[in-house]
Amino acid sequence: MPKSEEIISTLHSLSNNYSFVAILWHAIVIVFAIMLMTKWNPSNRLMGVLISLPLFSVAVFAWIAGNPFNGTLFSIMGLLTIIFGLRGSLEYVSISSPPFFIIGVLMIIFGFVYPHFLNTDTFMKYLYSSPLGLVPCPTLSLLIGIILIFNGSGSNAISITFIIFGLFYGLFGVFKLGVHLDIGLLLGTLTLIVKYVLTIKSPAG
Image (cartoon, rainbow, N blue to C red; front, side):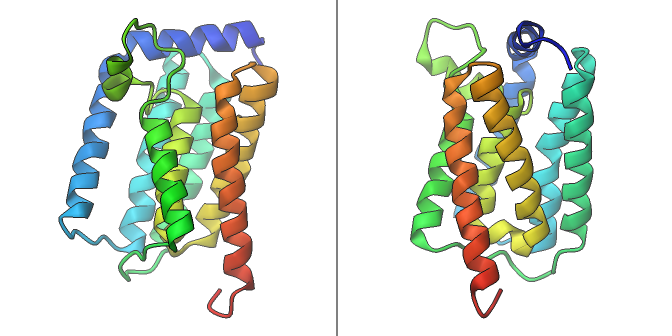
């Protein structure tokens, strides 16, 4: 595993040298949100597959930046998510209860404007080019928000996958890299754990 300084340097480099990729992902998220608000209702299967795409983006750019650790882990996570997604039902996604919906929205906002690694003197730039799809924590935060809102695309396996990786990268970011902002990812992951426990304990789960 690379040293903390090397990892942070790589994340800074990705965030600033490939900001056009982050801008593209921001645009995709906005279009996705607009489609959902205009009554588009995807299936659990399709949602599971779509969730995997930003993971592969992080993996690709980790390999490009010479970070095989993140490249390998996000490749594995992307493959697991798309496999579990393809096993999902063709039923429409369902919306979570209000507490999880609200936290999910907050996680999406947090990942969307993640104010770290990007060199800028204006907050406005975070609104469209924070390192979404390039750096692990904002990407995981946004996707966990989507999972919280849409009941994990009906897949406990997807929820478990994001719990494992969310805990790892949240703890790694806070305690190994000293990025205290990643506490947000940890809180979102803990919320997902609570939701998962309630799901498996409920009669329908």
